[in-house]
Length: 207
Image (tube, rainbow, N blue to C red):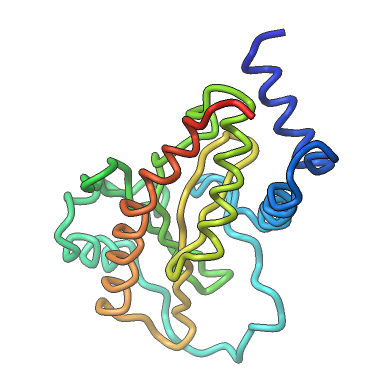
């Protein structure tokens, strides 16, 4: 059995049953909270729509039209980032060169949920953690950051190991460029700001 296989085995054990009695209580709680967050994760952006929003926050539907791909492209071009790539199945993606990291900002309309999903992708992977202790440290840091973030939610895709940061913008009451711009730029700034902390956690010494 390879070291990588053993690492993923340990990871699945942690997410499934906690860290056990030998770990500090704080670390157990952080991983339990992260496990709860993972039940609400999005699948990969291009393959699957976000989960339907709960009835508790569902308001009366309006007649606001969904932004078109052409409008989204125009909005992304107005962000001052690299020009977005040609859309693929309604998905727009642009390269971002931050101070601390390189990644992509992606945008897509989901008409069923009446949202525009903004997501930072090509950002970080669980595979960046070289051993089981570093995996635990990275997952714990994801939970800590999600407590503290004022914009977006860090998410782990269990199927691919990809880590992303996303925010949902409702267009049920209308959505304009200024709101899109403000959320997109804050999401990019947040992703760039927390990347060194996440990368440091991924390189933590073994527990």
